[in-house]
Length: 294
Image 1 (cartoon, rainbow, N blue to C red):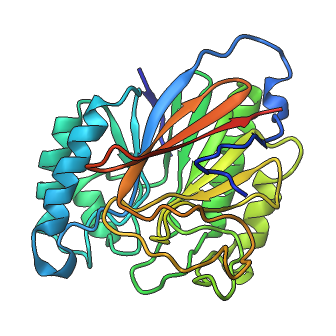
Image 2 (spheres, rainbow, N blue to C red):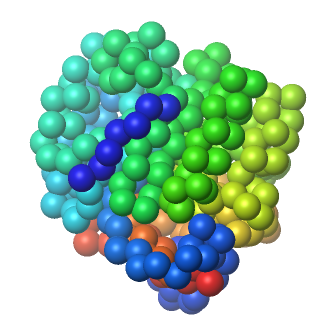
């Protein structure tokens, strides 16, 4: 059970090995049982003012319900354009998943509505065995960029210190990535003046227990970077729609495998391995990658 506390080539059909260095949180050499969970993002219920997104969410939820996994992470943009009437529809379908679902807001989720329908305390954490997930809201409804306050950064620092002392690995979930991304990319991220520098100072030091940063927001299939090893930064595919921006053809930094249909990602985390299965909703397609944590 999950315990709630408050506050190139990465994926490819060929699946060549990708090495993610192991964080010192595992230096004790103790046994770490295999963990399974699911990541979804950007469901955008109410998109274009009709029920097509809600219908696709119903199909996605039914498939997620069949997946192994202790919990589900939803990385933001639950509804589209702050449409309040869509939150009850989302929640009704969410019940069918049959496992805990932990959301963070996206830039389409007004904070008052998120607090009303989903969770009154937005910035929070939960522990599942040897993993701590930190849910951090960096989205504003009036911008595509991300924003982190001094209070949030101080809270994050305390959570990372506690996780390190408790020998827990950490995944940080924020809707908007912190990573710089320039043309031909979207250019949306947490800018230095909005907390980016301080954020990386906390999560990227050698003593940090952070294994990965999980994000939504981009609608570009699987989009990510590995230039701050050993931290792995991933924008996950939207459950509603994705766009092929030809990033790899244009030699954009990072990776962007060629799969852009709506879907979700089943994750298996072991002490020495991270496996991602990007599953296309309503299709047999499944892009798998095993990443060794050494």
